[in-house]
Structures are given as C-alpha cells and as structure tokens.
Length: 464
Image 1 (cartoon, rainbow, N blue to C red):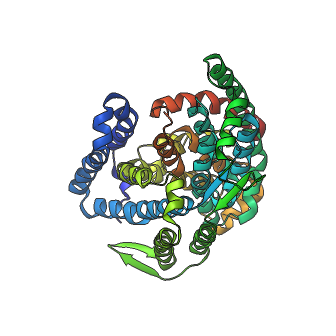
Image 2: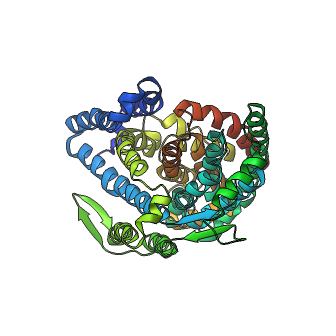
Image 3: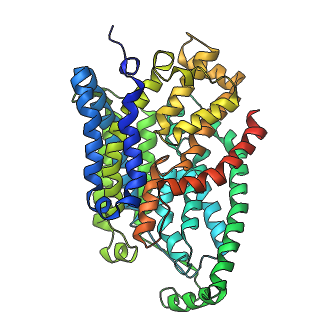
C-alpha cells in the first residue's frame, strides 16, 4: 500500500511556504514598487519552487496532491470569494450616518452576528465598503479596519456552519447544524472585550485628531451630512440600492447548503474525484457572478468604488499560498506518522486543542486544520470506532474538546492577514480606498497584543 505523502515529506519541505509568507510580509515594505508590479510572479515562483521538486521526487503522487489542492480547494475557494465579492459590490448602501464611536460599535456588532448567517466572507464583502465610507472623514482609519477584520471577518462567524468553513466541515462530518450555537458565550466574551478595546482606541484617536488641528468629529459629521443631504430623501438615514443582489446572495448561501447536504455521484476531473453537487455549486456561483454584473447598473458599481483589483490580488497570492502549503497540510494530516507528530501527540486537554488548533489556523487553511484535530480528538477518545458513532459520543461526553477545536479554528483566523479568507481581501479593499494598512508583521503586532490576552481569558473561562 502506497504511503501517504505526509509520511514521506521532510519538515524542510515547508520552506517554500515560509518563503511565500515572508514575501507577503516583507515585499511591500522592502521593495514596494517591485512588489506592486510583480507580486503575481513572486507567488508563481514560490509555487514552482515547491511543485517542481515535488513532482520530480514523488512523481504521480506529487502531481495528484497538487491537482487535488488546486481543483478541490483553490478553485472553489476563488470562485466563492469571487461570487461574494461581485454580489457584495452590487449592493450600495448610502447613508448620512458617520463613523462616530457609537455608530462603529453598532456596525461591528451587528455585522459580527450577520457573519454567522451569511458567512464571514459574505458579511465582510457586503459591509466593508459602507464601513469605509461612513469613516471616510476619519484621519486614522487603519485601526478601524483591523477591528473590522477581528470581528466581522472572523469571530462573528462562530454560531452556525454557514459562518466559517471549518464549522461547515464539522457539519459535513456529523456535527448537528445548531450545535455550534454553544459557541455563543465564548464569542460574546471575545466581542465584548473587543468592543471595549475599540472604544478606548477610538477615543484616543479622536482626541489625537482634534489635537493635531483637524475638525472635531461632531463638526466633521455635520459637514459630511450636509454634503450628502442631496443623495438621500429628507429625513432618511440609510438607503440600500441593488436589492436584486440580495436575491443572488441568498442563492449563494442556498447552493452552499445544497452542496454540503446532498450526496450525488462523483465526477473525475484530471484524476480528482469531486461530488457532482460540488461541481454544480461552482458552476452556479460562476453564473451568479455573470448575472450580478449583468443586472447591476454600472453607475451603482462606480459609486460603490468597485474594481477587480482586490480579487485579482487574492487570486494571484493565494495560488502560491495553496500550492506551497501542501507539505504542511500533508504532514499534519499524517498525524503520528508525519514529521510534525510532536504537535498532534502533544494535545490532550481542551486548552491545548484550543491553542494548537488556533495557532496553526492562523497561518494555514483553518478548514483542514480543524479536521486534523477533530480527527485527533476522535482517535484519542474513540480509536477504531466508526466516525458517526464516535462524533455522537464526542458531543455527548467530551463536548468541551470539540468546542475548543471549533473556537480555535474560527477565532485565531484573525491572527494574520491569511488566517481567514476575507482578511486579505478586506485589507486590499481598504488600501484601494486610501487607507494605509499595517504590513503583514505590523498587523500581527496588533493581533498579538489585542487578541492573545482575550484568548487567554477565554481559555480560563471555558477550557480549563
């Protein structure tokens, strides 16, 4: 029997992945002009540095692994992001509201709960443009986008399998749909702590703006409201255009649920076996992109500052990320037979599951990371038992372990720009709107300083 690739790969095979991450982190800082013009080529180069030796040394097995991650993971990932990006860009929210502390707290809180209904990517793509617009008058905006990523693009997706890919994967493996509501209290603790910290940061930056001689927030709000008064009917605070795209958004959610709930025959695509339901989902999502572009007035997208730049950047960079992370994921999946066995063998308590699942989810695809430690927990408590029975017993007798794995895979996605699908795109859209965002490592300074103490509190409250 052929050994799995993860049992054969040495630990140094993750070097191209590390190189890819360092390029994303340092390229824009050290070589900004070169990076802006050639980041796609850099991504492709790292992919080749991994793929060519993999094919040379492992032949068909290496080819099969690369095709699998491209066809089964990367292409559906980009198609889903593209559909949500296109549909979200066809919904225009006009408002005379401006980004005061109270308005932003409400925005982030409501958006976070919305993320559990339509996914973190869907909520982020729908709300990032209006969030940037209501805060257009603010001088310091980077911290606003950072808290947007923390809340709407990550923590908010905790409550349903629709919220974040790892929870949907758990649903596919037998976790009941509404079981994830058990994450409500951990999520509320994180969101409450983040909102308190947001208010502190917001007050600090408002005071700094006034001290530097800018308009006071109240004067600025008044001025902007007067400038926008002719775009909305008298007395109206919010106007939403492009309602046809809400229908398309509902279709996106529906087809995702369909693909996860229905089992159809398999089709072979270049040697990769895919369920027909997944192929249908991908085709429907592509169709939705075309329909959205066709039925949405061009003037609406122009007013929404819609462009293809952010989705193209994600497409190019994540090609390199997905290819180069093949060794890391394969080694993790190999468990005790892989060169990262010391990690999977070290987890025993819920707290350890929370932190290790989370730490790896911050830099790897959180869906397979979730599945790796989900399987580790099943093997720890119910070795050799059929999955359906083992999952039921895990939920009944050891639910804290599953809670820790679920929370870790969702919460820690906020630790880096690549930790969850919408993070990088939100950053790109913010920069396109003129917001100077922190570098890859600069963002991690924020996430480590803010999130790690909160996650330590969550550990003490729920996983000890």
